[in-house]
Amino acid sequence: MITSHLPSAALTTAAVLSFAFAGQAVAATAHESFSSPADSVASDGFNNLTAGRITAAQLTAGLVANVNGSAGDTIFRKMSGGAYPASAGLYQFSGAGSTFEMAVADAADGLTSIVFQSYINISRGANGVDGLFDTGYAPRLSYNNGTQFLTASLIETENLSYTDFFTGQVVASDPNNPNHATFTWNLAALGVTVPVNSFRITFGTDTHSQTEAFQLDQLVAAPVPEPETWALMLGGLGLITLSARRRINKG
Image (cartoon, rainbow, N blue to C red; front, side):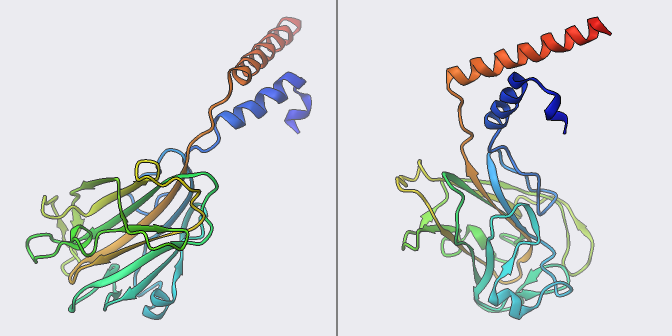
């Protein structure tokens, strides 16, 4: 192994570096418009929600993620309504809309924030569709098997061009269609003072919504090394540099 040839100071420095960079974003996204949040330690993505990959029965029973950066074991299921896997994603032709949940039975240790991303073409305004932005359908968080119903502390949206569900034609960006939405629950900002061991996010979609992908990330604050640790790390790096120079000079 390469590390067997490094001085003890180098091994110590490597360990410190591993500590310093712990908790960085995992490398996985479930949709091209999604991002990997900084400090994400568990990322579960759900895309290709089509009749070619899943069935209505599986959607009701619960799906595991098919895109993982670092598996958080999230279960996604439909709770009610007529949404079904169609040719381009989840779709509902009629009725009062559908409700869903993302459930995590074993949350990341030291959980500080939860980020939920969605890509849903909702045609807001044109069809009277509000989807995740309707008061009754907005994503809400409960934790530790409690009855909390917390709205996100931060909501961000994007209006992106997309391929029309029926025609297959590309539709330009429309301010009435904020199809990429990011919902963030900062636990401290929401007054959560106990460790979160499990949680669920519930939300809904409207009739005629074209649902393409979801992603759920669990964030843990990166540890901050003590001053003594930084000194050790810098000293170790100095020894590595000195050792490398000596080898070059001997060569």
